Length: 102
Image (cartoon, rainbow, N blue to C red; front, side, top):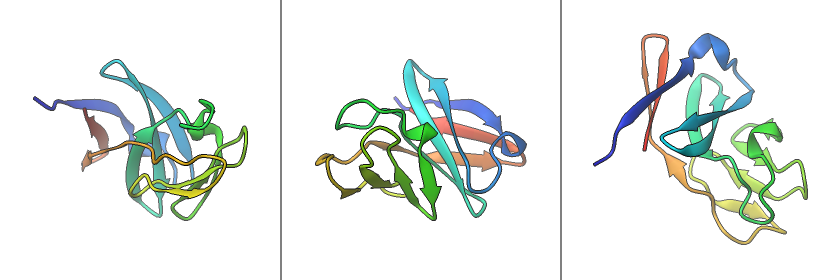
């Protein structure tokens, strides 16, 4: 059964940024895209690069290791060398609290 985990406050994740959190035994990257929060696996499926450390442009995150690109809103791979999508997670924002559902 899915469970919600508090990860941070909105103030900890300014617009245009991403940050990794340990959530329910997983490493999850959360991104703030113009006030909307998205959560995906932090590891690039190509070679394990930390997506939370990549460059965010709109909803596109670029892996800092080999420049694979993903859409953080749906997890779709946009650019090789990755060929697999990343898993996404539901996010709930209540007041200032950001929660991720695993």
